[in-house]
Image 1: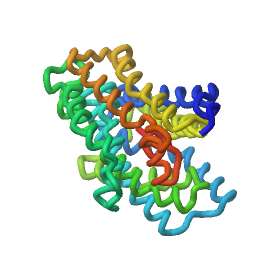
Image 2 (image 1 turned 180 degrees about the vertical axis):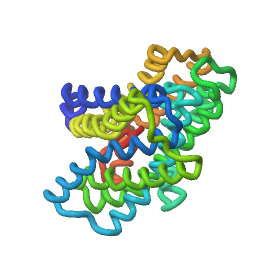
Image 3 (image 1 turned 90 degrees about the horizontal axis):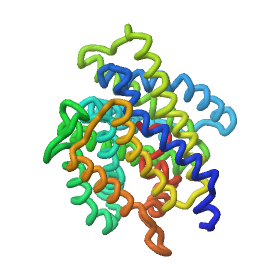
Image 4 (image 1 turned 60 degrees about the vertical axis):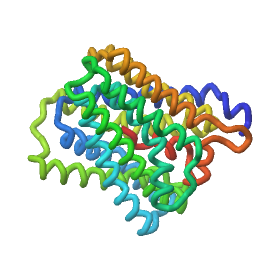
Length: 323
């Protein structure tokens, strides 16, 4: 990796902009004021308004993906839908800041799933980091006292952790498309969003229905959520990571959870106890340590990119259709 790639100012600007957009998604969920199933379902449907034509244009330019790849992309959407449902509930339970911080468990969950399912080697650094990260999540969730981030901070932290695990499952299943069709960037995301929409819609119907007669204000926030969380952020982060080293990209993406906490305080009036702040710092610091390069051999991000055949933003969960 060249020095320029590690420090390119324009690429860093794109990446930071994408991370800043992602930091707003929890705020948008709270402002929409709908239940998790309704918010999750409509964010998928509204995102498809943009992703659908984009995928068709990609199909005309590059041709279609194979049937097995399309099938795995759709199945991966089940996990993506679960991620949306867990994460939205976590935002409402624990607050936007905490929900986005604990979501970082996906950095550990993805290699763990690869180890459990495919027998791939579990990096030693992840084994050492796991108990520290879980301890930070427990503190952030209010195990030793909670502020005014949400009514159920402990449950929210647990659900945020489950959201990160579900998203890691989505990434593990979706890697087939990256390996077989590396030039198709939009099609796998679009198919996964279809799968997520079916999943969230089905859960919503079983739980009492999907709200349609929403206030105009709620529709406005859901539209912004769909476009920001699944379109704009994907373009910005994808563009930014292309011009940066994996270590630099991983470090800059930590702006996302930090900014989420600050926005939760400034926009929603969320407050955290000293223990919760310590937990957030511990989570972010642990993720930063796990994702930093390891000398000439490369760090976790480099290994994930080599293993999953795609850019580090997608391999670690900070990409296309992230919450």
